[in-house]
Image (cartoon, rainbow, N blue to C red; front, top):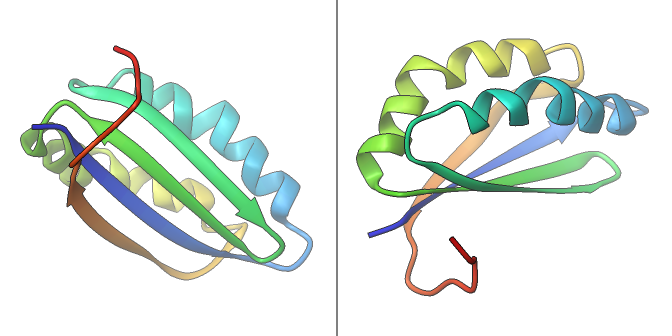
Length: 98
């Protein structure tokens, strides 16, 4: 069963564009190299952002969470406040084409 990770961020004031740029240039390319990764969506409004990543299975997402995610959060530290909130879900339905 597919699996999803929802990560919510508080973006520092005036850093929305820098946040989006870091995601595009650093985070998403790293995600694409992860085993089991399928898709990522990033939603941004002033001061807040959310990423939703879709994985082939729970194990792939958990491997990413323990091995790669901590390093990527460190790269975002200059543009975020506090600790991102991570939630995980089993995907019940999807229109994502594979």
